[in-house]
Image (cartoon, rainbow, N blue to C red; front, side, top):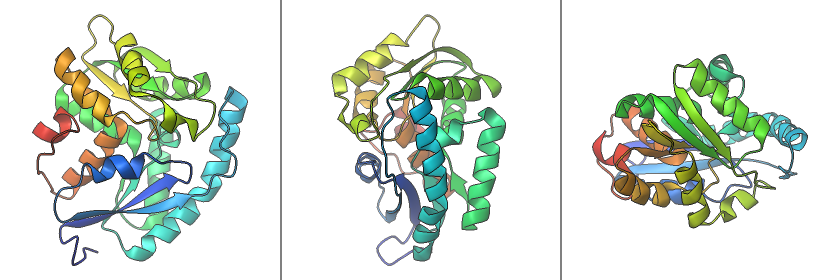
Length: 247
């Protein structure tokens, strides 16, 4: 339901309670007449310091997603965005499809997931061979690789930063994000992609893709772009990368 202040679209955004980046980056990607409204997933234990703990974190997260959806849907948004990404890659292409259908059933509205938005963005820029960075542990990096491989991309490298907690992801410095992007920019790589919505990467990506002369796609830019285009909003946005300026 559009509002007086957001006469073009109101988006519900599902965000882990530990996440401090999504809302900030989305508000830098906000055309006139658009609003974003958060439903926060309660995260009681944000540790991510090994593979087993990471999987436990995801199980806890899944139990809270439905409550966050129920909460944000009370403002009657036009479209739902998943402002969390690991779960959207889990289980490869089929896992993503099941997750998106579950969200559609729970919300009764359209949904943009991080994994699917990255696929749409890569198709838009014509990329086939990609390098990927994440803030994750190895178990999640392999799920990201699996998703992209199953849908037909040549994944040259996945570089996980192995952040020790969900909140620590937001503290990764710009130079560390840039170094990770450069590390996966191997021979023949068409585009660079970033997963992990609490990793602050939009500004770094915007600057770096001009220097590298290839698309650099941060997940928050991809999901905002996908949701906006789904609602027919095509205004170019500066400062968030080529995807939002040109496509």
